[in-house]
Length: 378
Image (cartoon, rainbow, N blue to C red):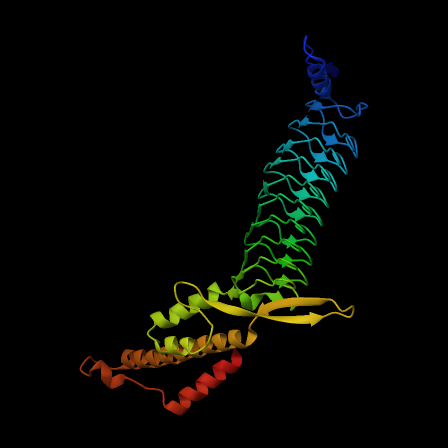
């Protein structure tokens, strides 16, 4: 049975106290079944266990709604269901809910705490747009879609973790989250779309997982505090020249995969590469990191607006890649010699001849030819 009650704390107090009590009057809807008319001044709602869907716009503009308790068994929160519920402070999404419809919580400006349960699969367009007091949120590992503008203008959002099931960071998903300081992208992300993080001015560092294949135009536009970008697998990712437009503080790009290859070469005894690396100015590769500086240039658009574009110093990156590739191929020719040596030992009859008698050194011109051939194949 649905019950609606109005309660107020009235005591024999001063007129001022009574006024405060009137302001705290509560309209409670207990056992809401999903089809009843909802008073505009409702403050608390508890859903009946039989409800499977929160209907389109059912609580839209209910500006006095403070608390909502959703039932397990609920499958979907539909379009604009709680849009502009400006007094709503927290919400826990049950594990049975699969989808948050477009604009479901848009404009819930006092929404501080959101708990998303495992089982959720879709966060629609603009779901938490302009939830200005939302500080942290963890996306469940079951989510595989986050729509455009999903967290746009969440001005208090400081941290976000995107699970591996989300393959695309959609356009404007986290745009103008001006207090966003930490973004964790898990392996599985493939595309960071245009303007995904535009205007996230306090974001200082971002790691691009090795599964990412494309960072589109203006993806990090006007991230003015961004200082470093870590690219896990640079050969597999296409980065637009204007992906980091307006990132005036961007100092360096780091390449863990290149460092791993460099360490392998040194461990194999090819220590000459250390001197060669040190000869490339401004490239830092010791202390467990390999970083290449960014270069920044100003461009003027057709309307006369000046932009700063930051991008990796491609000339230095090419030098580092070429050096590492050369020594890898050089190591390959050494292995080739060892293979020939072992083959001759295996074919030798008896054991009277010393191992060194079977050693084969590939002549210099042959080595050069092999190096050139393999280098062209890279």
